Image: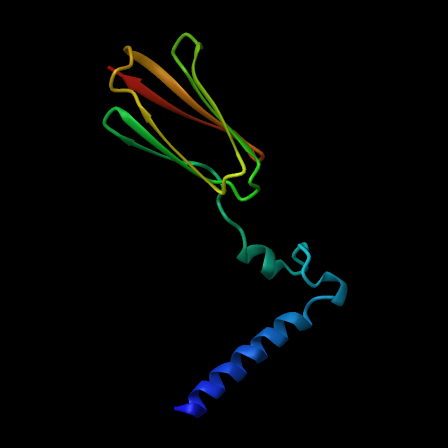
Length: 125
């Protein structure tokens, strides 16, 4: 049993050493840009917000890896701002919009972050 633990530790150290060998000594502990195409493809993540509609509610979830400011706005069908919120520093931005008591019409949810502007519409009847 002790041999298996020692082999596991040795394998982990070997893998760490190989990973460290691919970086410069001056890069240790710093954020660096991927040097190889394989590394770039491995870390590609879809950063668009996810909107889920359930009845007269819309749930929004956004992975905010930059931890920058995220603006949430809701406009009615006459382009009037009915909701406005700024969230700063959160990695995960979640918001539920409840339209159960809203006036009839079409509403547009707008999410703005460092990477773009995203829209979702909600029809209230």
